[in-house]
Length: 185
Image 1 (cartoon, rainbow, N blue to C red):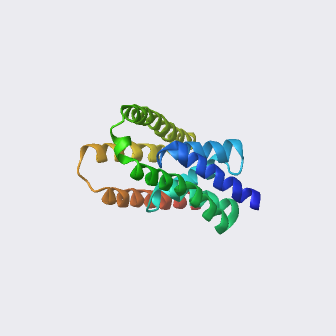
Image 2: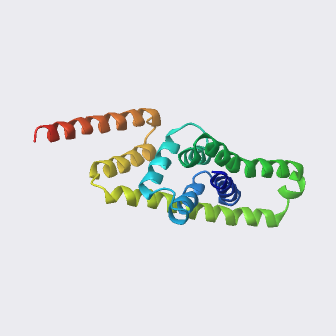
Image 3: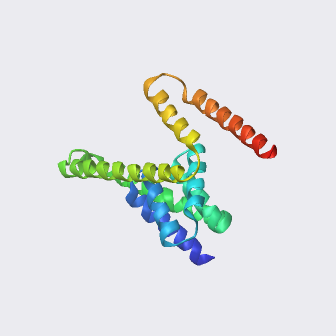
């Protein structure tokens, strides 16, 4: 148990220290806990990601909490959350202390621009990974709903909350229709 807690802390700490973004952290954690450690299946991890995205607060902290809890209960959740939040706290302390020197440094600006490109690539990996797993299942309606929601958010002023309620309603109606068809067979 102690080894698992240590590994949870070290993994979330190192990923949080290098991934630079809540959503960018998702693909790295997926790589570590599914591919390397084999603690979870890809489907389980996708469920964890969906759950983490639906909870309030930073997605990196939410996914760390879920992974930690599923791995080692409450102590695992505490270890993973601590590992996840410690690097940003340390960076903020250092940046606050050295702000004047860092803000004007052209090398720091170049470094940050390079990190932005890396974060974009990591986000694209997460999006493609989640979407490709969705396409493996028989969920044509959900793919169409995803595209439709994207277009609505992009080109209208409809509240995301209203859109979420509509998506829930569509999914519930579809579930009832499928269950009735299966019960009638």
